[in-house]
Amino acid sequence: MHEQRWKTEAIEKCDVIVYTKIFLKFPCKFWPCGPGKEFFIYAHERRGYYTFWQHMENAYPGSNILVVTLTNGESKRVEAQSDQETLKEAMEVLRIMFGPDIPNAIDILVPRWWNNRFQRGSYSNYPIISNSQVVDTIRAPVGRIFFTGEHTSERFSGYVHGGYLSGIDTSRALLEEIRKEKEKERINETQSFLLEPLLALTLSQTDTVPGLHKCEVPRQVFLSRKMGIPEAIL
Image (tube, rainbow, N blue to C red; front, side, top):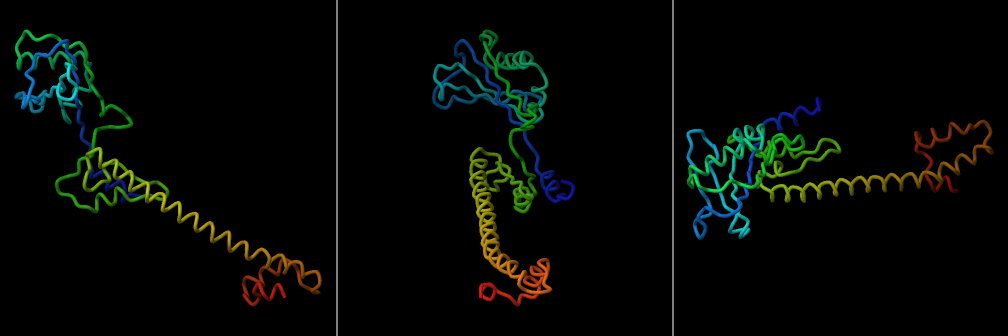
């Protein structure tokens, strides 16, 4: 990619955010449910420390699951520690919010998008001062390599439907390139087919022309352009 510095410079302008949803399952509900009671906020002196909570009862009744969302720095910190350490921290926060008598969680799921070598984050985050040229450059193909994903969607970057729609656009662009390649091959095959009878007839006549060598015929045909297919047939 050394020769494609324009591509790497554009990619370097796009950051990748880590967005972590931690799921905790409990033996029973202890949080309020009902209209207007799906989300809970915890204020801590450290920004983003188990701040945003949500229960899953509206989407999955009887699941007894709470979800807490962490981002970027807190996400990376939590990914680096064990699930048991994360569970301990989360339970301390919940007991501050709902009291000391709440039950312990019976299971926890901690996604690790940052440490996944195939992901290294959750979604793209373009700088505030940016323009469409950056997105166009990141989206632009390099030879036979095409780029797609939510980060190539100017309108919906960072969202699942951005990845979906950009995949459709890139697939169409790829199919168009394949169509163009097949059209070039068809034209080349047609040209080769028209030249073969000319060379065959011309070479077969060299035995009857004194002093004319076979190696000279293609040079005369292609360089002088004086002999066409009708003349060769006649």
